[in-house]
Image (cartoon, rainbow, N blue to C red; front, side, top):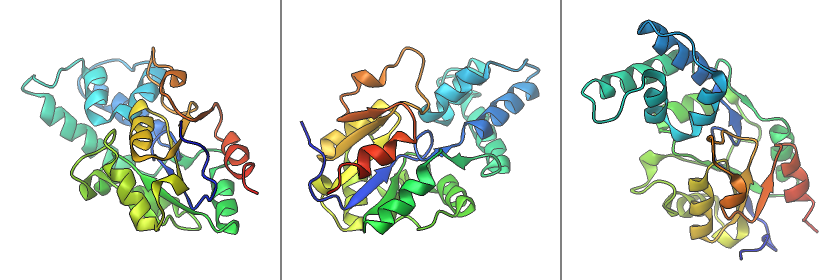
Length: 226
């Protein structure tokens, strides 16, 4: 079992559902897409729990479509178009995240983002949020040949930050995040406060640690520093 780094150089976060709460924007988008098809609003908690699974999953639940249906791709593109119109308007860092980032800087520890969210949506969101200090890396699917749960994005994150995987922590709210972190040899933290799908249990992901609230991250990470 990977242990907490004795020399911690970096903390890398997944984006949606871990670093930033973007669910309110996707709730707006899904409800708008349904309205365009004459459908009633749907349960917001179902939308929220599906956000980490991406646009395709949101289209599936929004319109009860499967990916092999002819109109699926056009509906996916429409969802992304709607998302572009609201991107960054309601998203916000989870409680305690900005303080954690500031405290990491005081300790000389870098931070970064490794996400399966395409750069076309990640960069505008990060610009609007304007984190200070800025992240030392922002790795998107555009930068790698294989996405999470493959460890390649996390290897690249560590490379860009200038540390080895055993000197870094990865925090994520999906099993694919924890699998990627474990395969990369990083210490992993399951963000159980994130977008957890119905029937899923972060306790089953095999993470080194788990937090129920984002405000617990600071104590878990910084409380172990000498």
